[in-house]
Image (cartoon, rainbow, N blue to C red; front, top):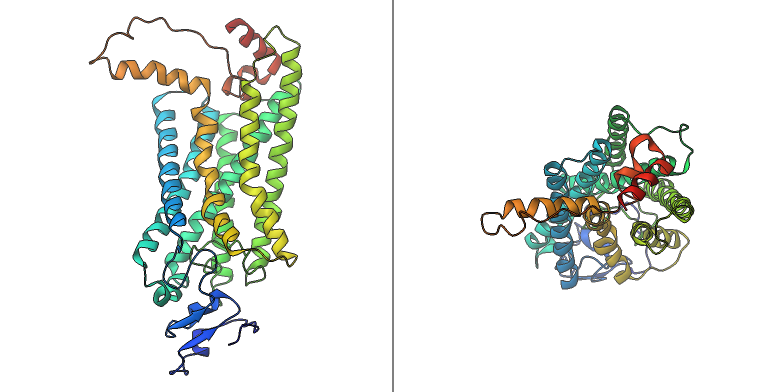
Length: 391
């Protein structure tokens, strides 16, 4: 029983000579992964994995597959829809496509974790050390890191640009050109890959940065000062927390600006669709990242984080934003819905002709859609005229 002993730089060689060892109790579950030859080891789980399972709770396995399929299907539909329905605003469409690609990578990560969970079912204890120290685990974690960071950076980039287009007076800020957008996207993707690749080689000589748990994602919550914790803190506190603050404040600023402008026009005051969309965009970002950042900070300050809470953070809260982004940025936009309504009748005209001669109704432009955020001339007041005319 060495439950009170902190073992730094633990290695399998420390226990290889104990051939008759049958039972051992450690301070942390992660230590058990270094004594796979011992039949009984405690703690039995770390909130995510157990001695027998990579994902030891059935609800975690079901959640992993549900979010995986939802994220994959949603982002494929975004890419397919944006390809089929040619958007007048090519810049906005390009950014949304890149966001869909980055979120799609999260479904790849979840798929790999699900496959490994099935592969190691009931034998994880004997294979865990090989898995977490493998390049397969490292690459899996790198995919999740690229997806997570590129998505955050893209959302911040979109939010700031929308804010400038809407709030800054006409003539002082011009909407992004395609060339400027491409350069910005290249920079964001390059930064995302650098952030993901750098720790894999920096900590190669000791425990791999991504091999801190069976899911290969270094949150450093169950063991906040494990090797690589400084880099993890820079990612989550320096980049993600800052991005969250910026996104929240710029959307609040946009909401106030649009609300004031709408009150100055003849548009109906009860048109709350734009407010609802703004609310849910900010809410999902906050719901995803605020709990992770807050709990990570509490762990650094010495607070005891329950295993169940840690498990839900990694399995559910971390990837859920990738499944929700397609809904918020594509499926709920009036322009996308109108395109669906226009295209579907033509696809099924062989079985029904009832919709062929139906008149096409005009719709009030959505203030969060491309006409506003990357609109003609980049001036909100001029776009209000478009909205009024359509109304």
